[in-house]
Length: 292
Image 1 (spheres, rainbow, N blue to C red):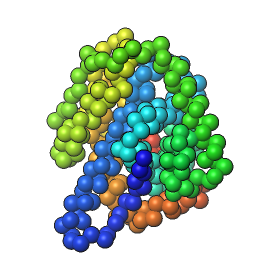
Image 2: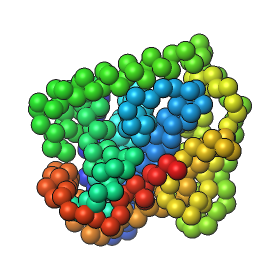
Image 3: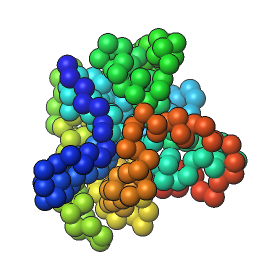
């Protein structure tokens, strides 16, 4: 199995037009991959809510683990790259939100720090298959001892989710009586087109959701929400993905200041880690995944 390590910015192309096209393709991959991870994260919340699954610990961490585990199950280069992009998405979000200045609010938030969420994705990856993902773990600076103990993180998360979902699993996956809606919305037409043409919502419908028996009907909807967010709204029985969130992924990937910081991915987590000490104005939970 091949692993394609994320090299955000390469400038060795033969022509400006080719470089621009290549960068656009890479941006689209990054936006879609991060959007899909967040959608799977929200499916974790949906399963907890609709199937009345007990949660021991912080639900946001449990939902992150669910998204990571589901993608690891696929065992393909494409799924592995989604996880790598998602980890880098959290590193980028951490830099964008200036995580070298962390407020008291960030420590009592329902979410872990973005940089912690990034490391947890990689930890579960290397925990499942150290041979395949060791290069990724080394790239982000996880030491040998922690790589070994990540195996137990993976086993605990995988067995726990498997146990609580087993009573709700269908013997044979089948179609659900749910629908996907892409509202016209405002903002970037290109972003909305990217999500719809690549079937962001249908990916969830035809994948993990088909495996379980749900007591209630619900729909999936992409729309403008007025904020960069995604959440499961149990009051209206809809899993909502906000276009603003995909636009945020596009923005952080292409921001020039971030290009400089991420020209060497090895520096990313260490640079963030060094300075997590002082108060900051706003946490990235307000931006990326607030789960109202």
